[in-house]
Image (cartoon, rainbow, N blue to C red; front, side, top):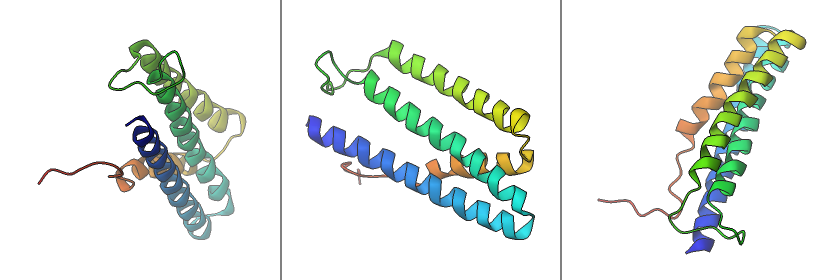
Length: 135
């Protein structure tokens, strides 16, 4: 059961990250062609923020669901680790947005475009790996 859970988790995380990356690249290229070359880098940066956030939270979620022996626990979640991961994810996103808009002076519309498109990938990457659907 634990191996199936690990496989399902890894498969779902990989699928979400691939869909995010694909949608961000398509959006960056499209905006680069329609608007300007500066939108390309800003959109890639905005999408990279969410991709980093997703990767980070996947790592924290894996930590929150492991026992002392580094094995996934069945039906248990360390709530403190889960909340710590959620809070750190928000901090990561805020810091990276501030860095991109303030320090790198990227176009806000481009950064937000990549940010939003990468968030939409959660909706497009619905996974049913290892899940039995009810009829």
